[in-house]
Image (cartoon, rainbow, N blue to C red; front, side, top):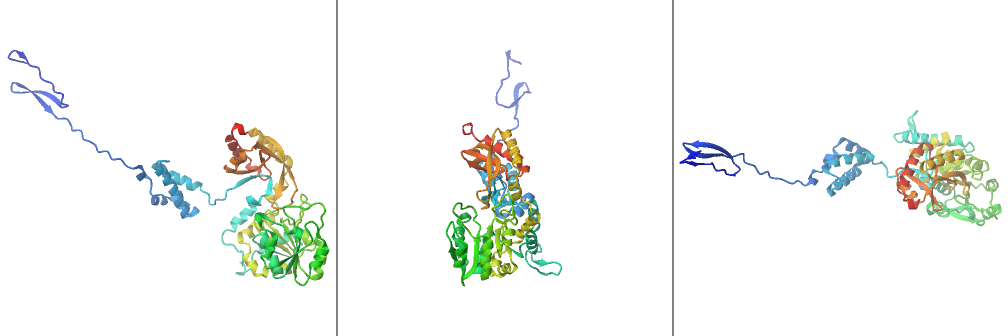
Length: 481
């Protein structure tokens, strides 16, 4: 544009505004139009902990409500609280809390007792709960968990004798017994016998049979707690029939013979037999009580020196007492078998009410006795060649070796009797990892090695055992192998 001979150049202003060239008359003007104003957005920071789901929201979830029924209110709340605390620490983001709660509750067991694969070779392992139950016994136990006719005659609607079916099963399995009584454990059976027969009187027993059982409990202390007085006869290694005869008198309540569980005395020894004691006590009308301990109802060719109920009653014992969860292979229970008059005297004593067995024990014991075979029986009589083949498969899969290994009966039964078998030899460091694994595996640690004996592990669990061993070995350093 020209004005007065001069070239007029429109000025440019960097104002950030949109410029338009326009005319106002003859004067060049610059028309400016303001662009859209940029708003300043206010940024608000939210504490991520405020995004963690509230407890009431989590408790209202259907899966959590089901868990409350299965696990209990306090435990479910504790799980939720722990996961919320983890989110507050930043261990997981708030959006993960929901799924973490559901996963944790779904995986939470209903008991803190952990199932264990017994790889020790000890069949009746007290620290592992002694005898594992047979499938039929487990089914019976579950069936008895609700309302059952444990003390009711459904035909008449009247009260019946408690545990009648279990009593019938025991008498069928041991025909030498006239009557049977079940209490809550083996020690209770012996305590009930000495209380009912000799409270305030004397119990005549050999010094060599005053044993100490598990957890430091001693037979003399148990009997003394009943109010009976011990009349010890003979010596530690030798007790003769004459020793009993000299001790028996007007204050004698019963004569007690106890199987020497957990140990044996060899060499210069002597003891009175049950038939000899029967001849003596029958003359005096004194009950003869024999504590078998292990619970064999009939002889077992594998354990020729282990006393059984049928043989002992046939030899003249008035009653025998035994545990249900040892060689019998059933639940924890105390079993009394013998003459009807003596068993009835025990059943009528007030203490019998305090030590009676519950419906679950009665159901599982009935099934155990009726079936006969149990995991304990199978483990005791396991085929050595089959055990070796299984051990070699496991060893081959993990690059280990197989060594000869003797199992044991355990539970105080057949002390010193070996059960020839085989074990997989692993580094000693694998033992701790096996115990802490899932599934938990209890091996034997011996002579600087971890020994895995498959005798007490069902063959159906071999794959689980293999997975556990592989996991354990993966955590063992090369230096420790």
